[in-house]
Image: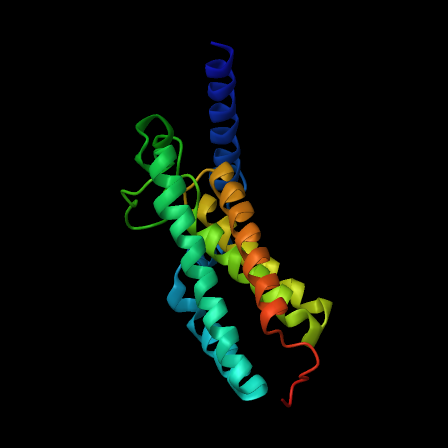
Amino acid sequence: MRSMAFSEAIQKLDAYWLYLVNRRWSNPVFDTVVPWLRYQEVWYPCYIFLIAFALINFGKRGGWWIAGFIATIGLSDTVSSRLIKLSVERLRPCNNVDVLQFLQLRVTHCSGGYSFTSSHAANHFAMATFIAITLQPIVGKKIKWVYVWAASIAYAQVYVGVHYPIDVIGGSLVGIAIGWVTGNYFNKKIGLKGLGTHA
């Protein structure tokens, strides 16, 4: 009974945080900009730049870096979408009639998939962590600003009403863990340190 009561308390608190982000902290600028952060097509130029940067500056190792980057995304998506979501089976807030009545849904439709963990958050934090760990020896600590990019995409999931805050927090932690493993594995087995930007 205590565990059930605790679970219900967490759910209510999570729904309240969602309400704050989705309704209380909304504004016309965010309403226009934030939904676009969710769409991968918006970020295609960034991905193309990363691929070109790796191939031009790091040659064959750049190819291995791209492979590691793609593997990181694939692993993160598998863990989040196929393992965790299918085990937890948490209903999305936009599919929960008790929660939806308090939401402003800022997307054209609500996915029928489950909510925990957010795969958007998991995948982008996995990418950000892999990038930060592998490229920091080349470009320095400023590469960690990539986490701001990942966080903005995670925040967008809550703002538009398709995920609870705990969904994106959980997804972010999953992504960071996976990116940390793949990034450090890449550095140990291949690495870009010492190549400079003219390798």
